[in-house]
Amino acid sequence: MLHLTVLSPHRDDAAFSLSIGLSRWVKLGTPMKIVNFFTESEYAPYALPMQAAVIPALRAREDKQALRSISPLIRMESLHLLDAPLRLHIGLDAICSTETARLQNRDETTWLASQIRRYFSRGVVMAPLGLGNHIDHLVVNHAAVTCATNQRLAFYEDLPYATWTSECTLRQKVSDLENQTRTYLIPRIIRGRSVVIADKLRVVSRYKSQITREEGKAISYFARRYHGGERIWVPKYSKAWMAFTQ
Ligand SMILES: [Zn+2]
Image (cartoon, rainbow, N blue to C red; front, side, top):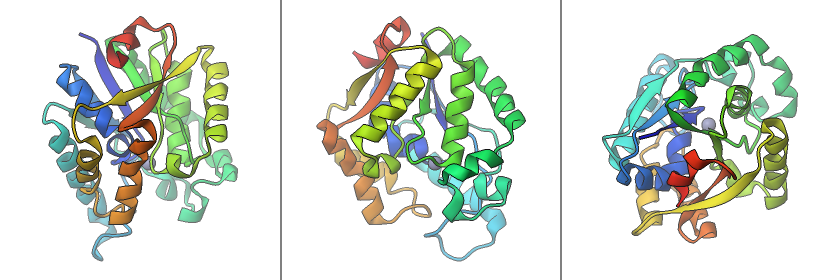
């Protein structure tokens, strides 16, 4: 059976953006792995005051608990890379600035692509669309695009960024990616079988150091837009992706 690898720039993106999908795919018996990239971070705005050095471990615990609550069968891998503020020496106000892209080292992105390439040989891969222009999300998106093979790369809508991104901006992003990958991308809604929005809220609420209760609701209630689902963008002619979106 084909493996599914979800590329998660930080330790929360996969759960925020795809917990309904993850739950659905694990029930199909899909071998799944979440790959977290920029896990070395001092970002924990809602945690109690603590030494910066222990924040990565706190975030790892939250992520593990959240993903375990979806299914203990989901495997996790971490690349232990520095997140944007630590890597690029920038403030939080600059991480989504278009100017910041110029600071990113191209060799690092090429190295990332070499790490991602192996996941395509095992199955299909899902990367963030890069909504919100967070530099870490853009780097993972770009690295995945440069090494994608055989119509096996699909994209998810980054949350919470998708909640304030217009449909027009999102469609432009998809169009850009179609040009870059020379692939037609089509939307597919992945729906759960039960009370998915309440379930999703329970999962995302585990990231207590990262979001407030209100932000958790905004992320979860975004699924209402798709009648209790999550939208992903898959290559139109991909047989490999067909099994995951029927
Ligand atoms: Zn993120």
